[in-house]
Image (tube, rainbow, N blue to C red):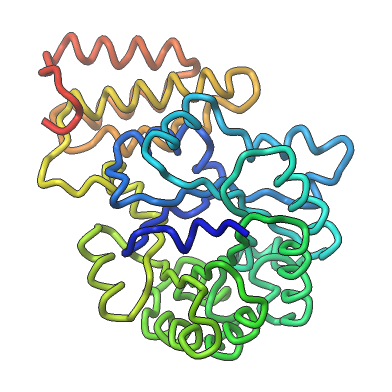
Length: 339
């Protein structure tokens, strides 16, 4: 059975699955800016097994698993792995959808979301709610593993209302997942407070005792490659996963001592917009794209004004016009985005 997790060079760096963020367009931008030494794994957006099983809703939900041809080519060139993340609470649907993903798509692995802390999701017994239902959680993991030859990983948290790391991770390890990604917060914390890396270390030590073949990654408040490397060494991990850190710096996975230029940032803004238009024009709400513009419009003269104008844009063409007009008013040097 192929298991790419075992083939990855250490330390492992991965970009977290994020709702309405890690679609094929953004993944391609991040991969294009990255040194593959520092980005080995990407994840899709959260994909509901119930939605994938719905005769009418499947087409919409399946958009979360869409991978453009240009992204496929880039990931192959850089040898970056792509994992489909799924969520729900019915083992039989995990079995069905894991098999479907294996047969009909070209992913390198499948990840089970047992960490999303959103209240309405938890209320329905899914994602981090499964931490309080270890028997069901194990049934789900086993069901997915039985349906696929792809490696199955689990992304989760340290507990519901309080840390229960060692007991919970011991349960997960009984299923021998290919990897565990542990976010150092409880469900109750959501994104508040600081991630507790001592708890993440407790999970890693359980891994050492129960199933050393499982790769163990920590997640939470990682904002640079150097910080990630230090956490991996200090807490005895195989790698780290980066979430919100990518919004601070889309060049996160290319940690050369270079400051992205104005022209480089605007080039990536335009590229992201063009990819989004190509992939989703007429399918997704254009306004969803605006959340990304702030990560490209900062730390240069006129950035705030440009950002304000982009927030008022209503079409892709308006974005191109606004950015090109800005470039004419402020001549920018040509470059690769790092000058």
